[in-house]
Amino acid sequence: MEDRLTIKLKMSREKVRDAIFLFFVVLTLIGEKVNAQQNVVLDKSKNTGVSASYDELLVSSTGNLINNGEMFVYNDLSNEGEISFETESSIFNFKGQVPQKVTGRGNSLFSNVLFDNASEKAPFSIEKNILIKGNVDFSDGIISYSNDGLMIFDESAAALNVSEESFVVDKVRKRGKQEFVFPIGDNRESNYVYRKLRMEAPSISSSVVDAQYLWEDPGNLYSTNLKEDRIEIVDNQEYWVVDDFNGQNLPDLTFYWDAVTTPSSILTSDFVDRIIVVRWNDSKWIQEEIIEVDKSNSSIKIRPSGDGVFTFALLKKVLPDYSPTLLTNKTQINGSEGAIDFVILIAESNGENANGVNPVEVRIPDSKRFRFSFNDQLTSLNGYELNNFNWIYKLENGLHKFTYKNIFIGKSEEKIGVNAIFISPENSKGEVPLKVTIKADSGGQENRGNDNDQDIIKYSNKK
Image 1: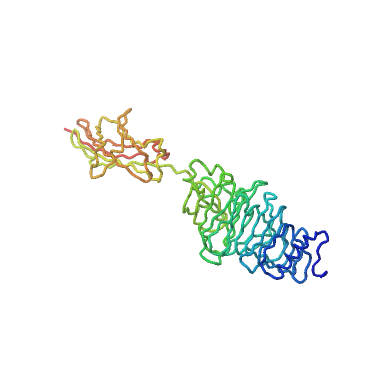
Image 2: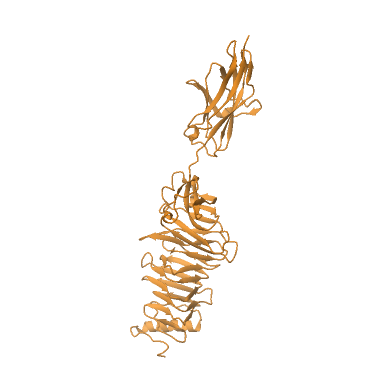
């Protein structure tokens, strides 16, 4: 027996019993629960390939550890051989009171895994790939990965109970065509943040997608100054990397903003109307198609145009833009005077509502050549349906002013009907402009280039 299993002499008799009990569980593969209260320590075993010391469980290069029950590891696990299971209900518990490492070059296949360690904020360090077929229960303790390690969730695997207290700092891989929430986050020194990413179900079972969240400026690698013209600002504090290894179109993705990591330059007072997700396309940041912005869940769902680097951005603020169109019926007057009733069409072209501060106002300069009359009960004129009831009229400071009573809705239009008489100068012939203007700050607009329209009234009053 000496060349098969050596028990360290430092162990008490009680610990020896626990170790031998676990040894026979592995040999017989009966799946019984192991209620180890201390670290299980085994030395080299040629028959099973299982060896352990007082401080760690070691699977040697020729070892094959099959867990068909519930196994507990209270300290480090080093796997140079094979770890697997035959029973889907089996659980591998990483449950310690000191920081724990998972290392080794062997294959590690688990059904269900529990991470539960409150010894420090990030007690788990994984330096190898581990593949999970069932569920990972993130009970307590943040998991950090080295560049040599990766947590892989197989087709039916799920991440449970993920929170600010337990998630993965680094890349996570998902195989298969099931919806999945990546349990990812990052840290700055001792500050850790959970920044999940939801992926809808891929279309093919061979899908392989990696996702990682980085709490750092994407501009260090991907200049935030290079962006589409309609983008005002790109998030300079965080980004996600999502890689699709099958070259298929990524399924819909949902990103979640957070005041802890998402900068105030993005979370402005009106950000919900302007926030987007952008992707780096190898030369600049481009806007991704928005499916839904859900303020209650602090999320934005997109249909990605490709894989790669994603973050938040704000579109340039779009202001309302109003333009008038003068619809005249008669522009030729013969004699001393004549009716020139007209309609003013006011339209908003940017799809933005008025700001509620500056009412939309239409103006016509007063002139002795025109006599205007406004009736707010008038409903049609010159074949046009009118909205006179929505407008207030007054003559003030040499201007005929028509002021909209309500919030002017984006992409809508209004029609004002005005009864008018043109008064011709005596014994003369000529032309006089009839001009309408949108007040400069109407509804919060800034564009001034289309605020005016006019028609020419021609008259002849020669005796």
